[in-house]
Length: 185
Image (cartoon, rainbow, N blue to C red):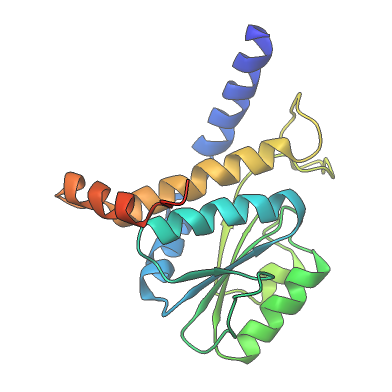
């Protein structure tokens, strides 16, 4: 098992080392400028999106997950963060186009810089990881399906939130986040 754990850790380290800092910083900037943040992904990308949304909420951001019953209408000055390994997921393309039509900004987290969704976005963060498609441009992996992409997305988005929330008074920031953590446990 230790060999597999080390291999997975090395794969993720390589992916993370190849993320473009300016793309991550651009997402951080848009998060801070947005009136409200909407997050969407399908399948496992959607699960990573929900984890991201929860962490944004802990950080004090007004955030919603598309598809939940309490999610309001998206409007101008809002931000849609879409997560799609392929960058071509049909429903995400629809939501991105509709969001743009309504005046919201759209940011895509993907492996595919040349995708249909990327063409209409205000920003893109490429996670250079393997997906279930195993395109020639993707790195090799011992992991099945899109595991490498999912894990990398989770870590990169966590790092972006940490960087966005950095403050001189880390203890006060931690206390504020703790207050927002669920207390119905």
